[in-house]
Image (cartoon, rainbow, N blue to C red; front, side, top):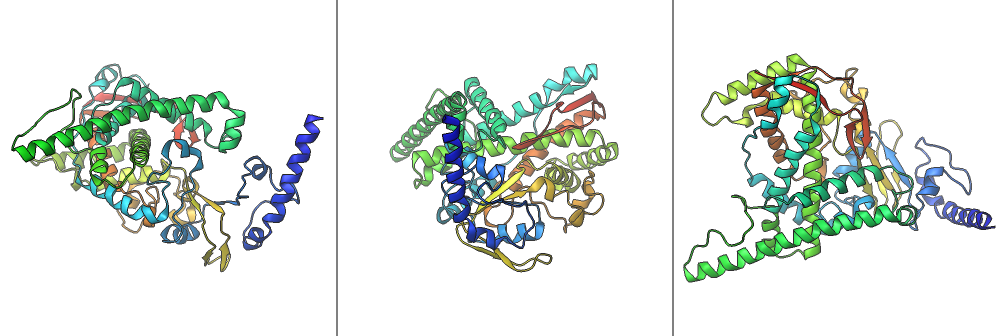
Length: 454
């Protein structure tokens, strides 16, 4: 009896959804896609049914993507999956607020300078020359640097554990039928949701403590300046010698505490996600292409022959990182939620429009491996293609919503990669790559690498 009632309710909701979406289906009649049966539609549409009756449009076409991302009028990203953690951040804020917040972040990341990082943890692996998973070493270093840069202090071990656990939880939720939609996630996975909220609360509690210390430090500094006194150190927490993101956001004064925490969490999450994934893939790819490794080494030695060791004068190393980002974009899917009808022109399907309220999911992983735009060797690792300025990279986004920390991220990756290549030779050992695409690209068999001292 209960099963029959549930089935009847599903049929009624599906029928309502079918008739409500008639206008949307007319808009996309010129696009190829699965046939939608009356009442039931497609299985995915039923499982992810929302009160908005959203139309999901997966896209892997560069011509359509370029038009959509460059528009000023379609800036809503629609990242419902992570709204509990990153809500009201630069990633999800309203389009009228986005421009000012994007400029503030861009200015912060442009001012920060890099120093090269050391790798004492690899010495033992270099002596044995055994294959090991480089992910724990690299991700720990990236996490420490990212959290310290944004928070202004070295985070506690409890904070780092909660941060890593929360990202792991979201990776499992990505493309999961029972947890992708918030309402279904609450009903189908109550214990996982409770753990998620507990982790978010733990992170925000420590963020608030750091924020209060930052405000106290700023207040006492202002008072000291009025009285002609210099204060070098106030709180017990060890602060870093550069201005942190949380200080910049606090000084701006036009963000609420919830917005400030969301901004901080977003930069922590995206910075860690982008750099740790990209660096690990870059190490694996360089190790398995000896000619690329040798060219990087020669370029770095020339750059370090000067007094400053300027990493900005390493175009081939940068092309290696961009090629890695092309093949393995840290953000597999970019979303846009259309607030109004989106008219477009296309050389193959003609002129048409996508309907309002539709969610467009751009598959970067598939699109950046397209032979149509990158040739028959599109799936091969060839950094030389980025020495030609005409090659386009979408891993940082495009248009008004592009990543505000693009150059900062590339310099950060160089600062981690350069000392490693100068000190160690990457050996082409390990099993074949087995991609694992869960929110971010990974390898199901780990990032297997072997090294030896030069």
